[in-house]
Every structure is written in C-alpha cells, then in structure tokens.
Amino acid sequence: MGDACRTGPQEGEPPPGKFAERARAHHALVHELLAQNMGLREIARHLGWGRHTVQRYARAACWQDMVTGRKRQQPSKLDPFKPYLEHRWLEANGRVTVLALHREITERGFRGSYSTVNQWTRRALTPADGSSLPPAAPSIPGRPRRTSGRASRRRLFDSFGSSG
Image (cartoon, rainbow, N blue to C red; front, side):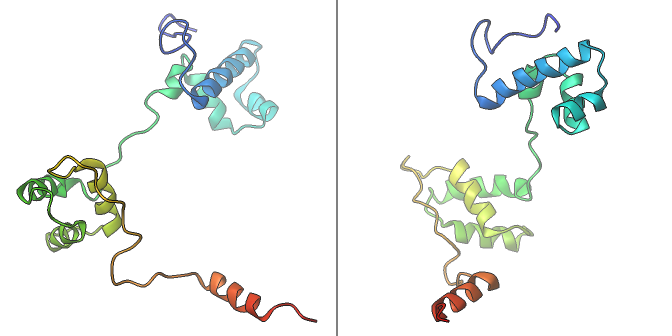
C-alpha cells in the first residue's frame, strides 16, 4: 500500500459505513493473494467473484479508491430546463404546482416524465416561506392506477377459492 493510503477517513478512525468496511477488507484480501503470486482469474475462482471485480480491487492503490468517486453524476433530461424551473419558482414565490411546471417545460421540448420533475423540485426547490413541500402525490391527478395483468388474474382466481 502506498503512502497516499490511510487507515480511515482520518488517521485511526474507522471507515464510514458498511460498504467502506467491506471495500477495505476485500482490497486487503485481493492484495494479499496477489502477493502470493496468484493471478486475477485464480483469485476470482478462489473467492467466487467476477474477474472484473477482482481486477478493480487489484488496480486500486488503496481501499479508499474503491469508496470515493463511485457515483458519477449522469446528465439528466431535466438539466437544460433547471434554470427555467428555478426562475419560474422564484417568479411565482413557490406558488406554482409541479404539474404546471411540467406542462410548461413539456411545451418547451422536455420529453421526460412528471415524476422526474416532481422528484427534482422536492429536492432542489423550497417554498418561499421556508417550509418543506407537502408529501408527493401518488400519481398524476386524473390518471387511474394501473395494475399488472398477473396481479389482476391472481385476485380473480383467489376470489373463486379452492374448493375441490
């Protein structure tokens, strides 16, 4: 292990969370087996892991490399419309519905769903009075809830009972 590797987030502290603890243990295990001159495929077979998983641990200089920077922020369909949504939100002092915002950006070319807009507004926008937004509605008003055919058939057959 190199000098850049630490034992925890700060010297002597335990790693933050279960994933970090597992990453530390797995990294040490893979590097111990590599030190015994085992190949990546042999380690993968020995541990019952995928070869690429072993390869990721082998290439990481220290276990922190496995923990930090795991999630890359993917571009969202909503990204080009966020400045407009923030502007409209401020312009209306937080007194505009998510449904109205969704309709407005759909007219401007947004091709995503209502739930995408709803989730983002609940995370990113706060009402003018500083309170939290009310809980999310279960679905778009006016649309019936859909059930899968399997669930419907199961209820139908369960209602007949099993007499026989």
